Length: 134
Image (cartoon, rainbow, N blue to C red; front, side, top):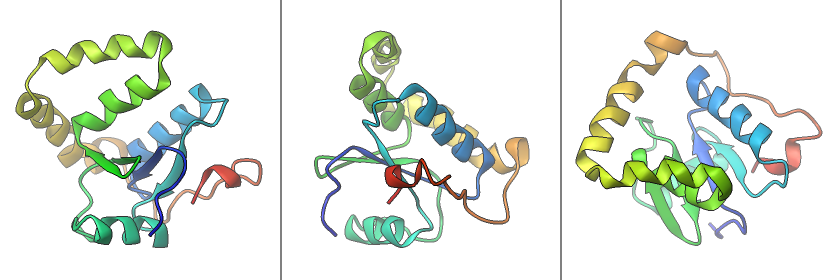
């Protein structure tokens, strides 16, 4: 798999929380700094395999940027860094040790289907957004 030119967010396409996060990101990223792909997609599965990550048990959003993988709470921090502007204020959470940040992230990830629900299929981008998806 060739690395995408833009930072790419891979997400659980059937998770309502994850799909909502992607829709939020599209709204705050009018310059299209980021691309998106569901982890269940062909591109998502290829990326997971390339980085020796489980392909069936999806428990994190993944950011691929310049050949580097970010998972769990590190995804949010890296996205804030890349967005710039006032989003960099979220970098204050980097003062907390990674294990503590990931405990909170994993707690939300474990409960995401129960709290936010699950779709029968992955989100289908509109024609105008299709170019932002792998």
